[in-house]
Image (cartoon, rainbow, N blue to C red; front, side, top):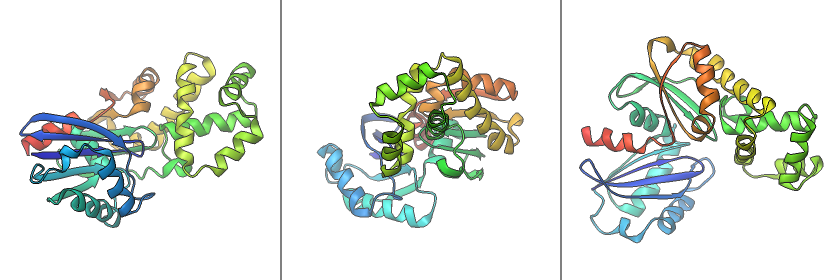
Length: 279
């Protein structure tokens, strides 16, 4: 039996697979080797997954795709944690490769992750052949929830939005501007805090100001990332909460760029199961 996992900073999806059949699926907290030690990750896995996952010889191979696993050093941290818990061969790859394999399997195309953060790549059916540096929420991550939250707060503190929306937001978080800034700059994971603001923006996405902000975020995604690929020659597929929740605005911007978007989904795990059944 194979264990296939895909992890973001928010959550990790685990799937026990026999052949091409899903035997069991479970969701735990996110894993990120940039913010967690090997011991932290091992503890999270052991305490979060059902005990049945750790039965002797149940899992023959672990395929893990995770955020923060783009370098050998970070992959080694996660790999050591997984081997310690499952005592079986382990393959650790980036969540970008996981998204590409899950979205396209053996096809060629442009895969895009749009969740709390952003990443994109050109995939040849097996490997990533081009990857524009996402840059993180401080220098890039255009299209992501964290950047949308940052754009919103930047306007909020300067009162560059309708006063009714400004008042509703401050009421919803029960803080004034000084309190918001204090919380934001004391926050150990600011990107997650910024991302959480998107719940409020989703509820108000019908309002012109919010709609325009979402569209601007996606236009920056295309202008600074997707346009850097030969994008009109390839299908483009998106995965992640930002893509799903703001699908209408995303498709609007894609149409403006004459881009061929044929899939928007909230998970690529099902595609990964199919990929590893074929490989």
